[in-house]
Length: 65
Image (cartoon, rainbow, N blue to C red):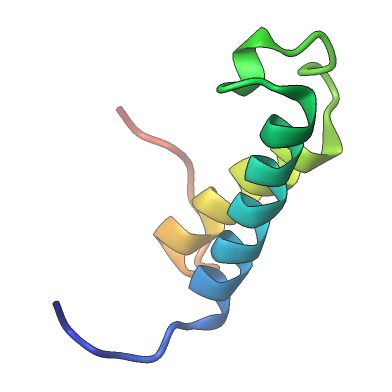
């Protein structure tokens, strides 16, 4: 595996993932989908935004499948 410095987007993603996993552990859930607070959840929204930004490195655009 390549040894390199993480950029700010990857660091933000790691932090958001850490927060999300903490929430899962506290609520004894393995997924956000099982949570009754999924709609409007700021922790999940921050995580999704961090994933998106880590993929496009702040260049914008949309998801294309």
